[in-house]
Length: 185
Image (tube, rainbow, N blue to C red; front, top):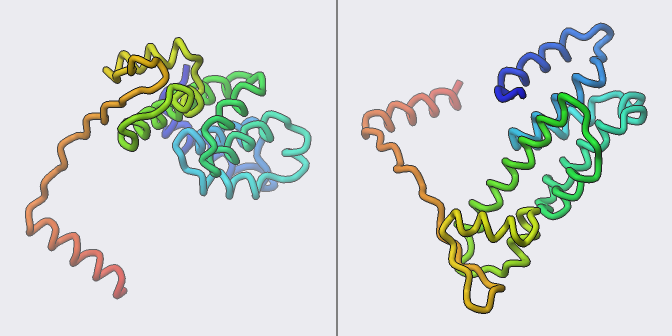
């Protein structure tokens, strides 16, 4: 299973640029689009979708299915994202990227819930994470979230934030100087 998506992304971008007649293979477009979604780089995903030739998007349903996920992510429709992921039978190597994407979206959803809610209904957690009730309860217990006696409300615990890196005043002044210099030139 491919795990270094950043390196693969660079290789695929290079393949797209060096493609004969400026048109890459459909598999290149599909992998690159899926990786952009994995990286949460929705702007690049949208631009890639727009520059893929119409003949490729219409003849390759997998690319259209990947973009359906992108549209749901763009609209921040988490429940729709999971539905779009499960609505298509993915081929290799896209299946690996989509599986990693699903896990990453789910992790971001749990972190969002932990940071944003003091209490949340179990049904909302299920909807936002795309898990069934048992799996959602299991993950909530792993995160030490408390389920109320009524069995329908969860009290999330905020995720542990890494300690902020403190930079010296001189470093901050240097960065500010560089930035202003860049803007002036």
